[in-house]
Length: 164
Image (cartoon, rainbow, N blue to C red; front, side, top):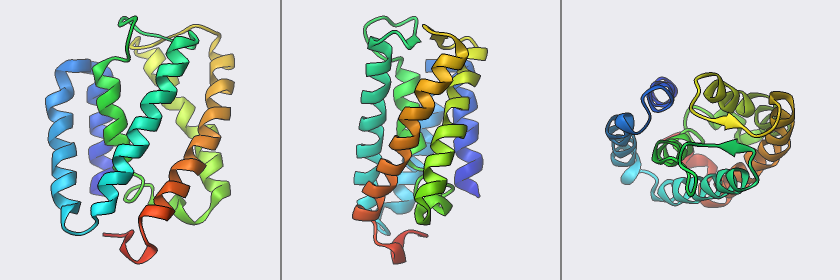
């Protein structure tokens, strides 16, 4: 529950205050790493892999003009930070998705794109396509991305340690 509340606080802070909120998000992230360090070291690898995959996907979407940011040549640093913080949720507040590929796909297809739409409503990202088209693009991508994230998680983190 703490992971859920803390991540949502970080999400709001990064979306509303951008790069100026990075130090607070970093505190959350470092606290998470300290908490899991002696309990589940493979989770650190999971976080790195998930964050890098997410950053790669968002970079490709930016390059295809699905996302338009003030920073033209790279993702905003607040979004990169957000990816690392999001990756902490897979083994904790989103762990309930671990056992159902259908739920992973549904959450990816229906819920994840709403985060980007909220960012668009807050004016931190502009869509290069209509909101409906962007939702569809993100739904297709995130449907698969969530399944991939949990596949990686299942490989790296054995179930008896997943609830640490």
